Amino acid sequence: MDIDDFFEKVRRYTDATTITKRMVAELIDHIEVYHAEKQDGVTNQRVDIHYNCIGAFDVPDRRKIPEADIIMETRKGVALSYAPEQVAV
Image 1 (cartoon, one colour):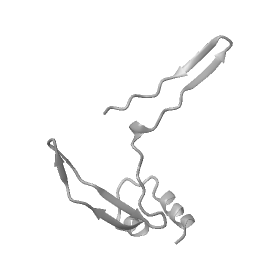
Image 2 (tube, rainbow, N blue to C red):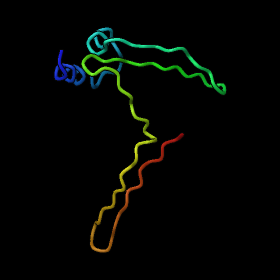
Image 3 (cartoon, rainbow, N blue to C red):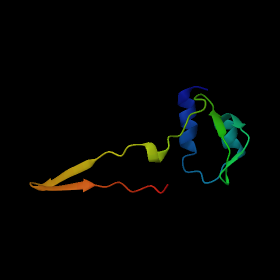
């Protein structure tokens, strides 16, 4: 399977609402599950999913992605600025 085949399969499942055995078999090479760690009453567990063709990748934390400043001039002398939504921490 090459990268184009992988993306074709991903596109096929874009609107999926449940995960099926077939989806897992076609898209995922293997999954690594680490020991759960409890800190300050909160339990966290790391799970790495290794996909066919692309391997594992980190999903960026949305809170750390800078928002673009968008300013539109609707007419001369009037500017409209966009304030992105705030993400709860």
